[in-house]
Length: 370
Image 1 (cartoon, rainbow, N blue to C red):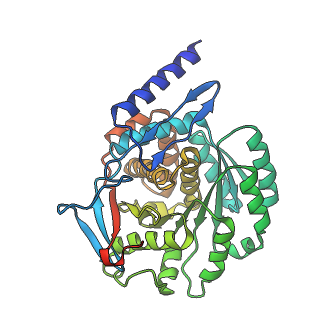
Image 2 (cartoon, rainbow, N blue to C red):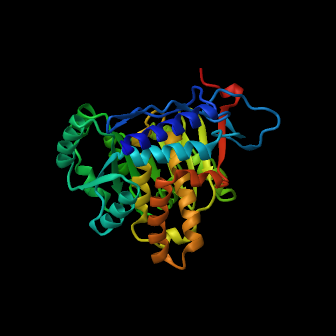
Image 3 (cartoon, one colour):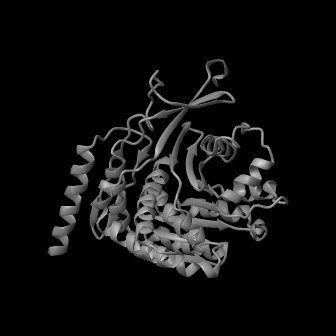
């Protein structure tokens, strides 16, 4: 009886929070989640300026006039801390399943530790065939499923993936693909071969690391301007939109700073520089990628907002952990503690002052698409 009473309290808190902070139609809508006979329906979460049809005013800050469109700053997701708090609570109670593919065994244990701390169930699978069988079982259990596919320097072996298997996976289970590309910078990097793998997987969200972005920039694709050397912020914003246009999905560009863009709705979220110590933690790239995959899988809808909310939660975790850490070892274990504490008491993020910025793009009138 006490367990039921606790669930009712949580339900009332969620509904009152969402109603109190303005619920209208925007690009961010969370999927209905069912667990233990308790149904928590998350209505559309909201923003004014980000995810809505507002126009540029004379007062907004223009980031750049590039190619055929102008990028300018908007207000962003209204009450981002409250939205993140609700989604973190949903993450803990919904317990989504993450199926990881092509994650190195040396990084697997760290990924499992981080996901376990957040209440996420994860399975690291060795082949696409095993993945297909597990997805079929998950469909029968009506669980929320996210697919985390990791591509590193040994991405050649992923070229053996068969298109018909991935097509079958999409028909068997309505799953969310999160593709994480963490390659080192090298002059012989074959972007065309990697693009074929991306087209084969057809992900909902792709995260590109610094190594890929440098190689891609050197290839001088026609979609990007030449301003990146003097303005890294502009470069990441442009890159996220350009790559989103190429691959037709939400793109996360992670290079110290983080830009999350979607060319379909012409919106970008930009996060300030992450703690440098994160790059010293071996395997943390797959840990953070799997966490973001869970957010996207659980909340569905337009993938840019769940990616932004997940990144906002990780930003808080990283900043709190860095304050208490003396090196990479303590940093990793502090991250695990912070993830557990935040998902158990998500309202602690309400006091976090994030520096995230939101940008919208508009085509210049003479180039406007018809």
